Image (cartoon, rainbow, N blue to C red; front, side, top):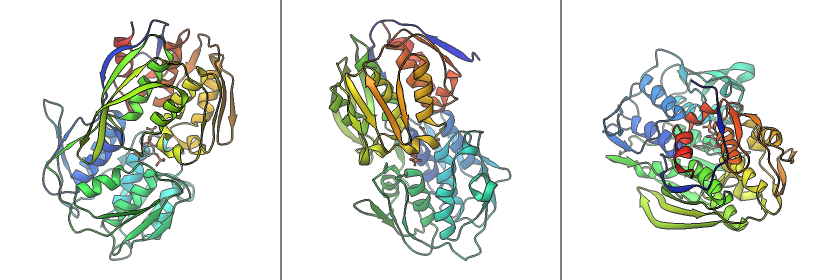
Length: 433
Ligand SMILES: O=C(O)C1=C[C@@H](OP(=O)(O)O)[C@@H](O)[C@H](O)C1
Ligand SMILES: C=C(OP(=O)(O)O)C(=O)O
C-alpha cells in the first residue's frame, strides 16, 4: 500500500456524506453485548482498526461475533459472568479505549489475562487506570512499575473486587468507564467524580442494558449488577469526531456546501459545534432525533468567515479529539485563537500539540506551542509541504483538510486514517469540485 498521499488544491466541498459509526459507541456496544446473554445486532458499527481490535479481544474472551452481508454485527455473549480465560495476549492495537475499558472488565474476572498494544499504545500512560482499579482489588502488574503496557491482570485475591469513591485527576471517559465497568463485578457501589464531565456513552449504554446510573454534577454512581438486559438492537450514530473534518473543511474552503447525515450530537461531544458557531461558522442542525439513548441529527455546513476564539475549561473534554482540526480552522480565522487546558493531547496516539505545531509549521503556519495548548494568530498563508502524520489518524486527516484549503500537502503515513475513518480519503476525493 502507498505510504503517502498528495492532496492538490481544488474547489469547494459539496454533496452529502453518511458519517460512519461513532468509534466510542462502537467499542462500548461490542463490550456490553459480549457481557449480555441474549443476541444483539449492532447496526452502523464502525469497521475501523480500533473497533476491530475490540472485536478481536472480545472474541478471545469467548464472545461470538460475526458480521452479516448487510454489514450488521451480531454479538452473542455468555452473560456477565461468562467470559473465559483468553489463550493468548489481548492486543488492543492503537486503541486506548479498548485497552483501558477492557482492563476494567478484566479485573473482575476469575482468570488471568495479558494486555498490550502497538508502539504508540505501549508509550501511553496507564497509571490513570491502574491506580483506581488497584484500589478496587485489581491485581495488575506491568512494565515500568505498571505505568505502561504490556500489563497482566490476575484473579483478584478477594472473593469479589470492591466499589470505590474516586476523584479523578483528569476528565477522562476511558478512566471513568473502566471504573464503571469494573463496578458491575464488585461487591458494592462506586462513585466517580471528574473535574469536568467527559463523554457519557458508557453511562447511557449502562442504562440501555438495564443498569441504574445516578448522576449529580460531575459525579456518577452505579451499583454492581447480576445480569445485563440487552436490547435486541443497537444503532450506532455517526461519529461527530469524524464529521469534524468536514465541518471545518466546508467552513474554510470557499464555495462549499455539505450535508452530514446521521451525526451523533450527544451534548458531551458537541464542543466543536459550540466553538465553530462562536467563531462564525454557518452550521444548521436538522432532523434532530434519538437513536436509542443517543441524540443524532443531520448537519448542514456552508463556507463562512471565521474569527479567533478562546477554547479552555469545561469545553475541552467535549472536543478533546477535535483540537487538531480546530487548529486548522484557527489558521483561517481572523485574529487570535488560544487553546488552553489541553495537556491531555500530549498523551494521545502521539503528542498532538507538538504534531500540530510542527507539521502545520512545515506548511508555513506559525503556531506557538504552550505546555497545555496552542496559540494561533490568523489568518495565515500556507504553502505546499511534505508532512508526517506521526501515524496518528487525527493528525493525518487534519493535514488533509489544511492542504485542501490551501496549496496542497503531501502526507506521509496517511493510511493511519483507517484507525477511525477507513473511507476518509476516498470521501474527500468524491466531494471536491
Ligand atoms: O472513552 C472514549 O471512547 C474516548 C475518550 C477520550 O479519551 P480520554 O478518556 O483519554 O480523554 C477520547 O480522546 C478517545 O478518543 C475516546
Ligand atoms: C485518542 C483517541 O483514541 P484512543 O484513546 O481510543 O486511542 C482518538 O481516537 O483520537
